[in-house]
Length: 287
Ligand code: KIV
Image 1 (cartoon, rainbow, N blue to C red):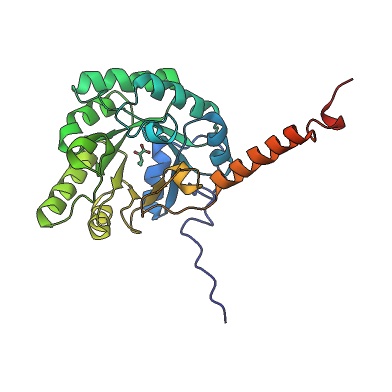
Image 2: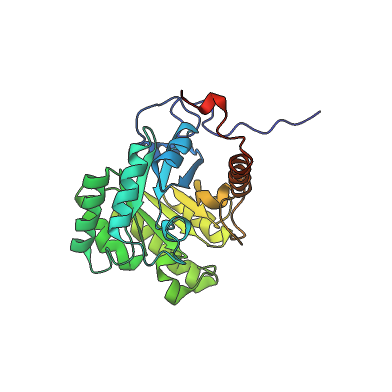
């Protein structure tokens, strides 16, 4: 007899972050409740109103306006050049395109490293000007004072550890937390971020065993990207997930569509219709 896959935890719960019936905007309290229920949930990046509205309609409960927009949207080769003006403008667009998803915006490179006052000024801008519900910042111990200040001011903070792309010039793009000492440091940093008030923690490119131990030992959810199956949530960069990214994508991503080919084919079909005179036809024409 064919074995049906087990229903995901929370699937029959109207409050489930993914698959529930709620229509109001997701809050960090809903995220905490999902961890208590042991529910897994998906997060995607988004950088514009139209794409964000598609993901919101699909029920994705948390959308990250990641500084990956540098690579995926703005044509840079890293996240480093992204500015607060880019982030504020595109975050506002994502908020406008959604009605349910919790929108989280990245604090960009150079917008919080000076200290808590700078972090507060820039996070406040994202909350007031763009309307986001939370911000994300990279770093363990080095970002704790910033996290505490933001949380005290009422701004929810998502932490981000492991591979932190803003530090590409020192870390490169490779797995972090390998070996006993590095793993212990990561686990210590994760607990410190929780104690500083972070409501969730992104773990990027971390050995699955280390991510699993962090997930077990925290009461806030972990969100994995290249961190194995045991995190509470998973995040993917949407252009990787949907097959829009040009060239090689990291091994930890999974491609669920071939949008680059679909869009290219549509553009060619349109061009051929224009060149051949098939578009516009009578039904597209006014008299
Ligand atoms: O900027 C981003 O998209 C991110 C995710 C990879 C977590 O930080």
